[in-house]
Amino acid sequence: MSKKRVLITGGAGFLGSHLCDRMLSEGFQVIAMDNLITGNMDNIAHLLGNPDFTFIQYDVTNYVHVPGDLEYILHFASPASPVDYLKLPIQTLKVGALGTHKILGLAKAKKARMLLASTSEVYGDPLVHPQREDYWGNVNPIGVRGVYDEAKRFAEAMTMAYHRYHGVDTRIVRIFNTYGPRMRLDDGRAIPAFMGQALRGQDITVFGDGSQTRSFCYVSDLVEGIFRLLMSNVTEPVNIGNPDEISLLDFAKEIQTLTGTKSKIVFKPLPQDDPKVRRPDITKAQTSLNWTPKVSRQEGLKLTYEYFKNKIL
Image (cartoon, rainbow, N blue to C red; front, side, top):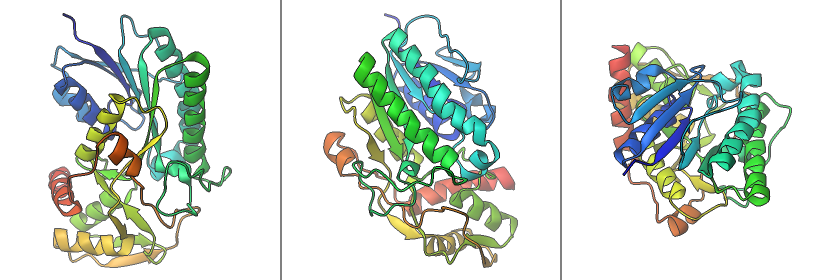
């Protein structure tokens, strides 16, 4: 019997490549599609000899054609870090809007189940804490971060429209801060930035006074949550993240301790519209997917540090 096939857009990215691994381990044939503007072939190099894995370099904002049957589509194509989407604002908007439209059209044609990678950024700089799925958010649509926030909000609206109007089988995951091997050292997010600075002996840069909070989920926990959502009957958005919240100043101190660095913590002005708090309410994932994160921050940071150490040293 032939294996079921899954398309993963953004398949050479940090999360996309881990999802390629997971879907192959679950017995699927995987097609990864990526235009490589932020993805990296190193992330999937270990898969290139696998007969069940195919890589296609392609921009999903154009018409997407995949011959043969498709059971599932995981739409993860998008710049996803502030450094990337500030540098690539129009590409970010296009992949959220045109790319999502093309992928939903493909899902409709193939009668495939499509899972959209959305983000905690749809909540903006939240006035509700922690963030639940029924919170509509506090987003500046014309601010510099709006290109990513609004691209994902539009993508969610388009996904629900295809679900309601065309009957396309859809899922939406709202991903909170995630970390682990295959993150890019230069992607501007807290963990690679702090670890990269510590490993190079540079000052560790904290924005504002460091009182803003984040919640970090290890990548294997996130992938498990996404897989459970994909296989579930839940069509409304679901938060996947780790509710263990920490201020960025305390987090920088944790990185100092972990790495044993002599780097000092220095403070720089807070970027525009930087969220002051970020913590998922994961009640829905716990009750409807029986999912809860398993990897402690201490354990996950050790694994991530080993990865970055090999990248730098």
